Image 1 (cartoon, one colour):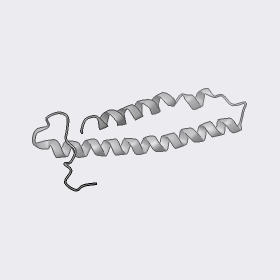
Image 2: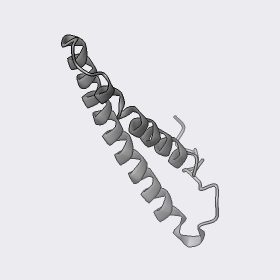
Image 3: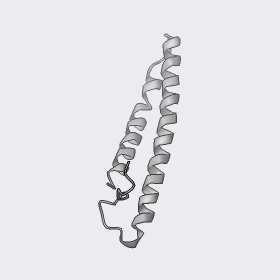
Length: 83
């Protein structure tokens, strides 16, 4: 990667606070991505546990899919705020 590449820029005007806003967006995005990763691990654990015990109810394992999808969408949309 070349060192002469410019840093990230916002897609909207933030005035003199642009660097702070970019830092905040990146911090929130990384935090949400880390939380999403660990929640996906927990969800996979629930699915594997449900597979090991066939008479269990599957609805409990799929209730959280909507939350995980929304969280992934938020991480993606935060990435679209800067280029």
